[in-house]
Amino acid sequence: MDDFDVRGAVAVGERRAVVFDTLSHPEQMQSVPRLTRGRALTVVYSHADWDHCWGTCALGGVTEVVAHRAAAERFGRDVPTELARRRREDGDHWDAVRLVPPTRSFSRRTSLDLGGVTLELGALRGHTPDCIVGRVPEWEVLLAGDAVETPLPVVNDGAAVPAWADALERLLAKGGFGLVVPSHGPIGGAEIIERNVTYLRGLLAGRGGPPRTALSPFYRRTHERNIRLVEAALG
Image (cartoon, rainbow, N blue to C red; front, side, top):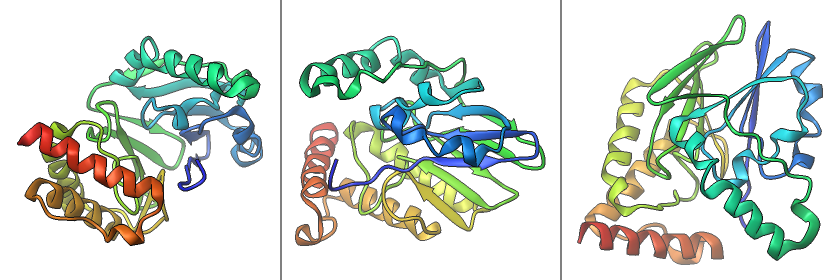
């Protein structure tokens, strides 16, 4: 979309490289081989939404694809349905996409040894039930996926918001990261998580979010939808 960006990340260790999210189209993965320096390659999906996992087929040398168990299940349901819909509506733009489902899944947490650095993966459901985050403790980096977002997160299930806010607060309390890399919005520090907690708590308390005039059309619509979903779920 024109009014929000999408970000993946590449982490390279001594023996292995990881691509954390492969974005929405194979053409967006063209620079990855240069970054991975010939290492064995693992792909991680932060979740199974279309803008995070459709570029995998462009990558050679992928030895495994890791995601939450619920993300793997989505590849048998809504993921191919969404691709079929976009192919109908957008012509041949999506013909190059070949879906690559996870080959390894987990429910709570797992870790990947890259050689000299470790990528710790943990479930953090909220935006979707299959959302995960990745932490590289040696680098004090958090790959946040869609667990946090600037200017505000996207709610899909109003009933998930209380547990989502709680999980982000536990993440803040744990600390150990100086750099937070969300999939949407600017890179920053712990203040990104703090702002998302404040926003989610505000939704639960019936308080307004950022001034609507400061939001792009996409995020203005998202904020209004977030309010409706929380009100419908929690009364």
